[in-house]
Image 1 (cartoon, rainbow, N blue to C red):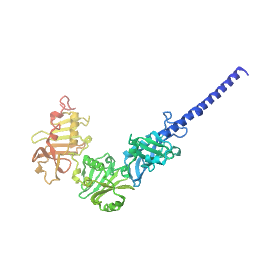
Image 2: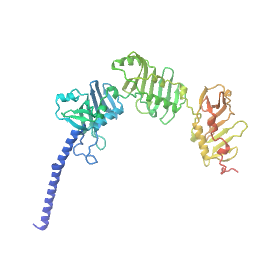
Image 3: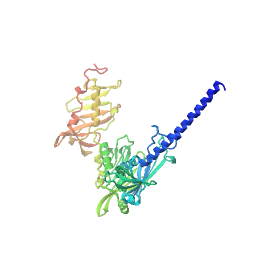
Image 4: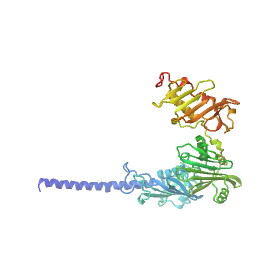
Length: 499
């Protein structure tokens, strides 16, 4: 055997030895250590989660956290089953209803993170279980979860499914902990008291009491039929302003619509009818005092009915909320009957002028009797604002922009007579002081007239705007606008073509 052959044999022998050492290190050292770690986790952790064979998290060994999908909490007073559907927890038994997010988040967080402080009994007797409140447990909890893969999937992969059934005993009054036992494990453990707080809840405590989940930004239509008033609000798209279309057509005040829906959404249910009361409640709802439908851009409309009847010897206000096939009954505050029962005039948009600022091409100020008109127009060449009367000159762009912005935001202080037969009694005529706005074709877009002082309120004047109703306008709101020539004329520059 020559030197080259000897070197090759030695290299192969070294490779075999190194491979053997590697296998020994894995199966003789690392594998037992890994098994020992898993045993320790099983002895100290309530919900043990191991990754599928051959899979490790990117941090070098920590398994991905469990994603809970199903919970059952049984206590002597009853059993509650909850299921995660479309990323939302719902109670499926003993009723079908949305679950309150906060307590469900708390219980799954505690189950996932709970560690045992110590092992109290390795092989408890019946007397021991009685002493720790585990002979007849205070609660029996079953939790199911899956370990998501790198893409967040794996819900239907059996290798990723995990579950635990545990029994909860009494509180350790010394440190606030709670005695726990797992199915298939004879030992009694002591866990942190937060687990007890998260688990011990009745079905009523798991329920979501916010039974009117209306979302104003997503709505396109609102229909209300109440005791005194009926109305319909709608808009073509979610970024367009609301319009009152029934019983009269007018621009709706967006702030009033938002406030109505915010107050309605924010009212939580007092409680829920007992199962034996449901037939009586549904019978009363056949003749509702309030009926409303909220139609979103996407998804199913929400239908709400409210009525009153005697329950347990007291007059109660009840509501039915229906969204598709889901429905729930609730007992609510009697004031809920008035939140949607509003006069159409309450929705009247308090903005004085209806206009599109970008389309304004000419502004004419009608001054008080005897004064000269002030007129501004956009230059057809440069698109810049110019003063065209009583003299020609360059306008201050920022002042004109401020003026238009203020006119767009100008609001009525109060409403007066709707569609008066005579405007003259308010001191309003074609020659009244005010402002007119025109588009590029010379079409009048909007006009503001100012009339007489409001009797008994010298700080306000009668006015007329884009609507046909009389309104009161604060003098200060109009007087603060830049309406004088010296405020709008840029004396340092000259308009093109002017002398």
